[in-house]
Length: 365
Image (cartoon, rainbow, N blue to C red):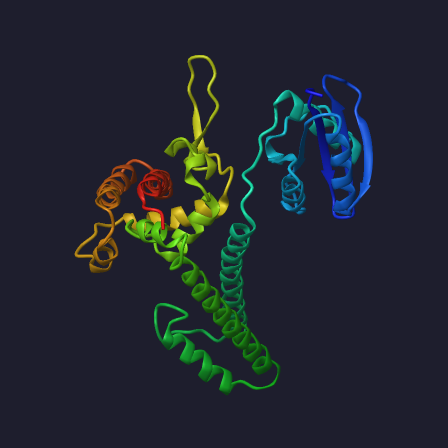
């Protein structure tokens, strides 16, 4: 009764393959289930009569639904990071059965790395913020299509240096009224689509701001906004992707989670470090790099930043002030010796450490 029962699950939308290893046995029992989670629950209840069950499955499009269902029933189930599963270089066979058996054996030997499972509310808000970024990409693509279409037909904007300003949009409106036929229809359709995308993005911005001004995010958002280059959207992105900062023991662990640490190929006495790993969370790495650009110039009388720091704990303000001076000096010190993008990446990595420190010091609301 004290021996663990190890279960590897290969999860698909319409089927689940379970490989069951009891204790130290080498032969796995294979059970093929449908996508109905009730069958999986009945299987785990049957296995629980023989001993404690430990189960796992790969993170995929199936999400965390199965993990939450099993956890609610009191079973131990973890979601495994697919990129960190050990694989044999010469292995060329892949089936649901082999994947399930491999997961069960590696999980029993302790060679798998589990991912953090957010709450349903946290995951929904994370999806909302990622959707906002997708709308930004859609908007940018639409602007590029409009510019390319007009350029191909000889319509060049020369009333200013920058596009998509108020002057440029007035020029587009006048041009649309002057055109006729198919060109008018194409431009009018693209401009209407662009207006729709920008309206939807504004709605998402308002919704994200509303969540950022309410518990439990408000205190952390206001603390993170003490940093240069960090506003509500950036703060909410970091909070939703990090979730609980206490699961990272040090700032370097958070930097590695965002893929901001240098890669390394050292051997013997030779040390060789390369570009950043770019592993882990791409969304936080993107917003940190964007925020790092704000630290590339000297800050003057920044009244907005001072206003954000009013009423914040002295520890948080002290960390933000230290980051403000240190990141600026770091950028210009590296900019003289390396490519500017390398300098910005280094600033983003150090900014990540200050984010960790502020989240540890920020009051909970």
